[in-house]
Image (cartoon, rainbow over all chains, first blue to last red; front, side, top):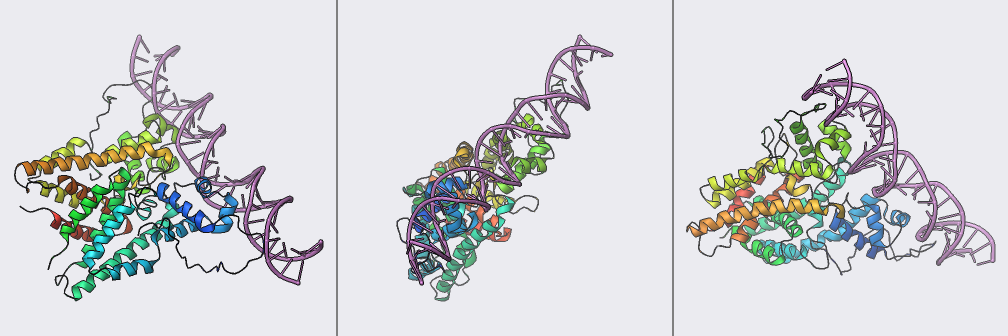
Length: 215
Length: 215
DNA sequence: CAGGTTTCATATCAATCACTACGAAAGTCA
DNA sequence: TGACTTTCGTAGTGATTGATATGAAACCTG
């Protein structure tokens, strides 16, 4: 979930960059430009980021953008994958947490910190970039929604595991619990954009954990 | 907070409509057209609703829109006030609730229902319409944020009143509590837009109330 | 070097953006 | 009725949108 600024993200693209290709080579760093595109989408949203905004931030011209990434939609989807990180990473984080309660708390804390970073835009790209849009971008909105649902689903599975292992009361409503955590994270994005500072978000997240079921 | 579809909202505009005015009269219902504009902004957002979208929904032409409402920004702000209702109404609702806990619970339930209405777009206009946008709409974003902050502030004051009357533990963190409720409402908007149904949102809201302090 | 391939910068494309000039139409007021 | 005022529909404004055509430039291969 957190943005990976400064981290080298290993993307699993089909184009193998180790193969020597003929023709004039790219004159810019494809990953670095993608990161700038991600930051632009993060700050200004999908439809409300223009190609001009993107090319200015990426330091390339429009034709370079289109030959390197396809079109605006594909560029956004690639930027979104860079932002969200690989699903494997999150699966790992959920597995490594001792309990689902820890996992939820860590997610909330990580969100509060990521949404108020000094080097990045405020809020969450997944929450804000396609929060609204014209009918023309319905497919992009739905792809973003699917990423959110997948995160929620993985957390719910983690909770179910704890219930099965008697770390949570029998009959715990794992669905509502996972929904609650995701809703809080999305809501924190709005508040962070409004200027709520990190300390307040962390205090709120801490408060919210009081709703977590006790044995 | 809920949209007032079907309700006549008394707006406190300086233009007194009871005064006979000279010249050709308006050929459309100003309030009804405003409601259609609100629904359009609600569904598609501020920047991502075009003047064409708005005039089509309102059943008027562009010049009529501009003479009646000013420009796109003023139309949106007026539509937002129609959506949010008068501050007096919300103050009243907060006062009428027996306790701040009831007030918070009612706000959550009202939000869950309003965000999944069959006659209205999903989610919350205040949460989604300006969730992202170009720098050109920063002033509009800030006005929406101010409405959100005012709602949060009023809830916090209501909580403080309960603390003073010993209905809540001394030292209750009213700020975090109010922040939590607002964050949940904003988050529910995102989930409602993703397709989460009313039943799930209500169950989640109910679950979240477990975080409310007990005496 | 010559041939092939890809990216480069320049200059644009049609479509849409928010917004408005203009004159006819429709009302009030004397 | 005849001014006066305001809104009406038509047709556009310049600017910006996402996306490209074009030919020169830069690389690998042979």
